[in-house]
Amino acid sequence: MTPTTTIPAAHFQKGRSEAISLIVVHTTENACQPGVAQGVAGYFAHPPAGAPVASSHYIVGPETLIQCVDEDDTAWHAAPVNHIGIGIEHTAYAHFTDADWQGEQPQAMLRRSAELVADICFRAGIPAVFVDAEGLLRGDSGITFHATVSEACRLAIARKMTGTIWVSAQHPASPISTHIDPGTAFPWDAYLAMVSAQLPAQASDPPPAHDPSAVFRPRMPVGLTRRMRKRIRNTMASLMSLPLGT
Ligand SMILES: [Zn+2]
Image 1 (cartoon, rainbow, N blue to C red):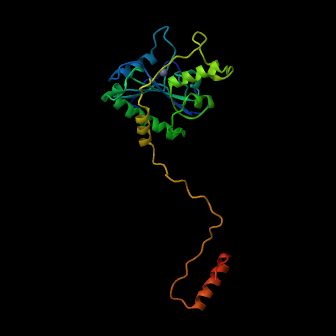
Image 2: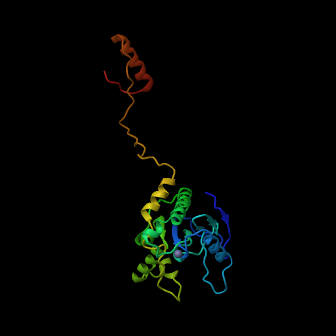
Image 3: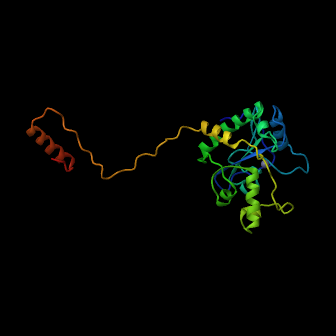
């Protein structure tokens, strides 16, 4: 799908060290209303002096989809998985309640986001499934939350997985990652249903496995004399080199 507009972020890394395998869902901690995504994109494009160095590939609002970093480049949104991740910011608060997410503007934003995510999943071969913290540590592919990336970092530190991206990527001044977005009330099930509805139809049944014992047995036309049947069988048997029943 085509973004509404492109506003390049100031901070990102050209290229990627690995292929895309993860989509990371964020909230910007702003109101969900028209104009906010544009403001966040402006912040990424012209960050004030001393602001955290950050960017994401996309910012989704109720009225717009803004691309800030090319998918082939590395955005800075979830440190340990930036090299494999696509970051998608949503103009919303992590403390949103169920009722907040059901609002007209958040629903419009989620529909727009789901369309984007389905498109990325299809193009990058990413399964439309949730990846929890254990899955992240295993290197599973799918969709996850920024909070879940933080949880994986905390697990890795507790397990002393030193030398892994999960520990070494932590900022020295803030060793325990504390991101909570997009929040515990983010309507994952409904969102996943929206994503799935946008994916091209999948074959419901796997193709039948090849059965070597299944040989082609031609049906004999009706109304033939016994002699004619025998001649046909013999002719077909010699042509097909197949054993025919009598
Ligand atoms: Zn985040």
